[in-house]
Amino acid sequence: MDTLFLALRVLLSLAAVLGVIWFAQRRLSKGVRTKAGKTINVVGRQGVGAKASVAVIDVDGKRFLLGVTEHAVTILHTSDAPVAPAEAFSQALEAETGEKVVAIAAAKGPLAGSILSADTWRRAFASLRP
Image (cartoon, rainbow, N blue to C red; front, side):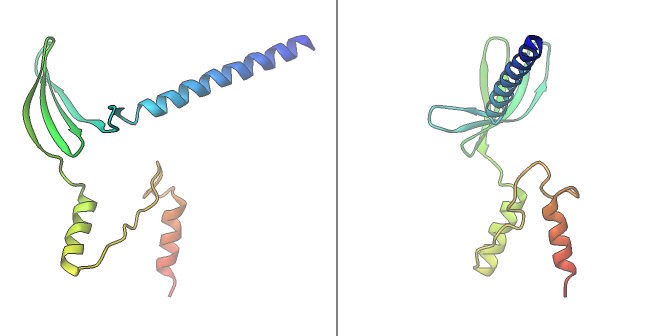
């Protein structure tokens, strides 16, 4: 009986540690947050040599092209971050019609917009109703 309680305590402790690790990974993978609450998002990175690379990052609505070497990071170019296509379309439609456009895909999640999403099936059946 003591071994059963010991095994349950070990499994519960392992589950707690794995839960903390999973939670920490989820929090840290959202992007690096600076003290002002701004998010740094790495758009892409490409190696150009043995110890050199070029990276494109977005920070607070600005896009930076960085040259990264073993000894230094250099800003090669700066521009405004491009607007997402759906957001650009909504802005253009709002400017044309003068009405605020509500985004259809309001639900965010890993399955949003896929065939596995329940919301996708609800919209499909709703569009078939007369």
